[in-house]
Image (cartoon, rainbow, N blue to C red):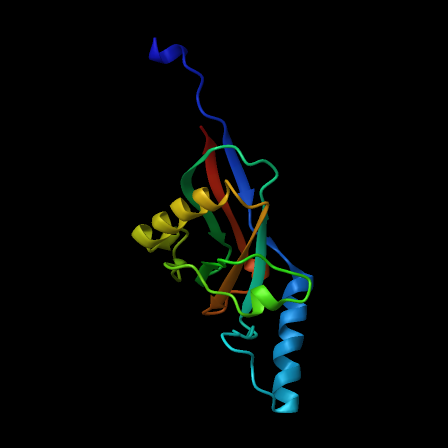
Length: 163
């Protein structure tokens, strides 16, 4: 009888580069640097190797996290960190964001097609995402690229199955 039960539907939710938000946050960092200003309490400034990505939760059913789908088209490393606060037009919440721990780290070594990752941390992070997906319409991610990787080299998504 278990064979007659429908299989859960899988949702592949891509992390999409938010170019406007990335640009705004970099301009803020540049402006402070040029003026010699101080950052606000708790403010984390966006450095050149960091970009803002987002997932739009088009539906908010009960979701169960499945493994990440991350592809780097060249060797390098990316760290995906989620934000615990929602962005507002004046950037206040995101600029003074608290970042979710742990971060998910993915890398591809030279002469290898396979992706490696910090499995335990990435899975824990994914479980937190499935909880946040129940209450959020959008979630933002800070992605740090290193070892030669740029946003154009990254394709990442979170895979959920609907319960």
